[in-house]
Image (cartoon, rainbow, N blue to C red; front, side, top):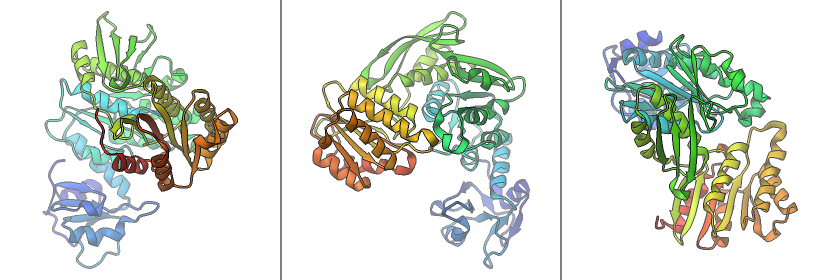
Length: 466
């Protein structure tokens, strides 16, 4: 981020300085007091469970130069910038950084596949440009500005993930970083409990198209997206499609699974150029994400050969279909970050590709926020596990229990289905039961924290040979 003084930041965010000299230098922005260091500005956010204002003193004592807060009654001597709204103040700072370092903005949203697509796009563009990309889950009204604070003079493109929980959120994010290119990976029933219908979810997602830079912006979409026509209704710029259809602007063909080592395929471009490419990420679902990355690379002037090279450099993302080789020749597919009906089926498709003759194990937790369809969607998974002959199923959560009952009703032996009260019970049951040479899929909604299960299994079994 640009080096700024407290006074300059106060002016940008329309704040009032308290207890500090306005010439004090700010070199970084933090929202966690434990990350305090010299020159940091600690933003005291009020969350559902934690109020950052309770940690202002701790942040200052640990070295932060000042705090940004909505609180007007501060302890005597504390250095702070007081604002009416911390979220809006962060947005203003994010906009300022983007004005200071004007880069092209590529924005990605979608029900599933945002993070994988973002990483592929960044990897492709990095073959020609200096790229800043969203790290971790910094895709919200607080996370997006934090990403923009990392902009430097050398950056040419920012690849930004935009998440949402409801209407208006993506629209707000596009006011902070108006996209030159915006992509919607898909529209699925991931937030049905909150939004109530697929159409409402599509309405929220298409805000990213409405936020495109007028006339010059480009919106990208899968050719066979069921909501395609609806999503394109309010497109502020031009459209570009990708997918398996020959009618798409960029199309895919001749996909070959390489098992654990990814997939190879042919990319066909509008001017009759084509190239054979490989991604080192397993699963057919990753191929369409690669096509999106190729499309954005092509629209930004990369050659087909540069695009293929960039795709070959893509690295797996932790907790998202990441393959772990553990002791006893066990394979663990860590997809613990989140779960939806579509992503669950995609993960099971990947298991079908790579399980071979291994003992097959599903370690699953609830899929949340599905509304009235929650029981039915879990039963679909249970029936599939039974039909495909999984050896063991370990389950956590009331909804996952419905999955287990469906599996039992469709032929799974009772001694192969384990209903676990918590993560520790799940780990103990897996360690006690699973033999060597097994393959395990670990997947559940974010709130169930199955990454804890993955960590304990890694610690218990140790690292294996790739």
